[in-house]
Image 1 (cartoon, rainbow, N blue to C red):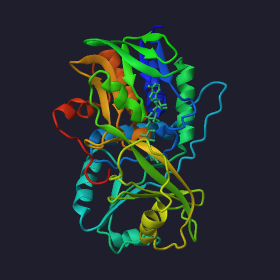
Image 2 (cartoon, protein in one colour):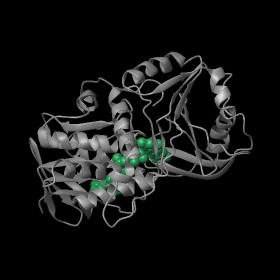
Image 3 (cartoon, helix red, strand yellow):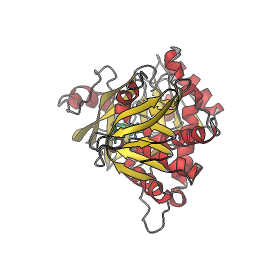
Image 4 (cartoon, protein in one colour):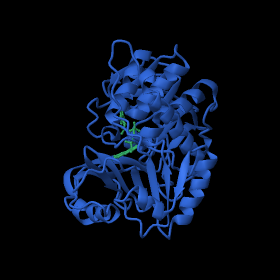
Length: 388
Ligand SMILES: Cc1cc2nc3c(=O)[nH]c(=O)nc-3n(C[C@H](O)[C@H](O)[C@H](O)COP(=O)(O)OP(=O)(O)OC[C@H]3O[C@@H](n4cnc5c(N)ncnc54)[C@H](O)[C@@H]3O)c2cc1C
């Protein structure tokens, strides 16, 4: 079996990469190998669909801007003959980052970067914030940044739209598991499938999410990425909060309107890594609800309706994605993993960058060199500062 490009893992990052490869080179034979089409454990089925430009690193900002361009043009972008276009349920209420005394300087520095990168972000003093959003507690805040263009969508609809386009563009999807990588330095030559055959190609992209490190390790590549359990809760309150933006604070609390209530998460970055989906029955009541009630003090009676867990492919080195080929070792082996909670909003831009690199040997639109694996060996973290 022979392809031009094999994409290992068919979550949002894999499908986005395969689609972008076909858009870059329509003649390329692109095959996705996905072991579980039900996506039972994949992060792609569990996300909350937030898209924001409020990052520290210009590359992350540019990746989000690219996705926003697509979201705002979804009807045309996602149109596939004979297939109905999924409704994104796009909520452009904006993203609001908030900070107290300890973190306000970080917020201000990031705001300068964001403005310099063309984000139409607005600095809001606490008194003004309280006037606009009376439900938000502001007496312990020193500043806030609102990015009105940002928002959230139905991640399943977004994924379906990308899948539809990829299939229509001619991407082949194999339901199988990549068990082994076959390498003849300086090239990877093939992947061994669980069903038996070897699939050869000119380039390979490891988009296996939290399973990416296991595959990379077969080549001696040490990806500092591990699965990290992440709770998300849907709660209703004493009144609807539909008008609120997506609120994030530096402690990790994230709140956005959902089905008349709120969807809320508070990431526990100290939780030990592992493929763990159990729900801590006390986490909402003990940790999340107090933080939620504190911040949204204009509503009361937050009642948990549903809780689910998913896995972040957490990059423990610096919290940003690792993207690109393994230069100097296996030049045709690419990775896009370790998104640490940003994978949905960055998949299409990262996929385009990888497609460019496979076809031309360089990045043409967004230069993702700073996200390369090289930084791990150089011990040169390229982290977000403040809110991750
Ligand atoms: C609760 C939660 C909330 C989130 N909220 C947001 C958000 O608001 N915005 C945002 O941008 N991101 C968010 N994320 C992160 C986002 O969901 C992920 O970054 C993204 O889905 C990662 O996609 P992926 O394709 O890399 O990985 P996955 O979706 O995990 O896909 C990897 C795929 O590879 C397959 N695979 C693995 N090994 C093999 C193999 N050997 N052979 C074949 N197939 C294989 C797996 O079956 C899987 O389907 C959130 C995540 C969680 C858990």
